[in-house]
Image 1 (cartoon, rainbow, N blue to C red):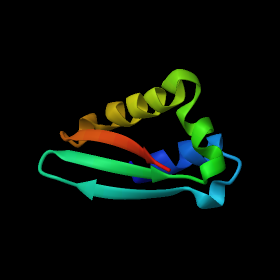
Image 2: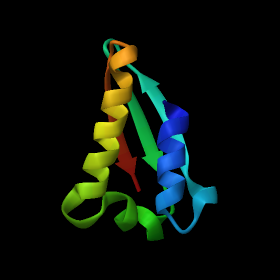
Image 3: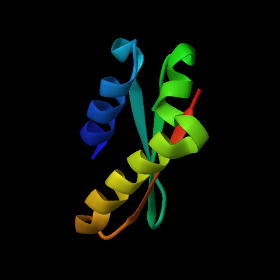
Image 4: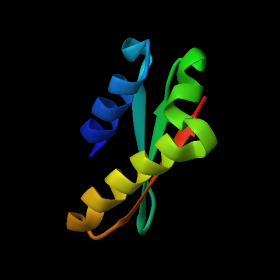
Length: 76
């Protein structure tokens, strides 16, 4: 799923070489911390957070196989 987050984020930004995903695992939660170029933060979040919400929805749907709760945090 880390690759899924990277592929989607790289398609959205102007600086795909600056896209990094860090995986933080806790007891029942996997957190994907997405870091992008500061110029691209707005593109990943989108108007009123719509793109960020869609990204989280896709990742959550893909996480059904893992049986863990998954979240995506956008770190600037």
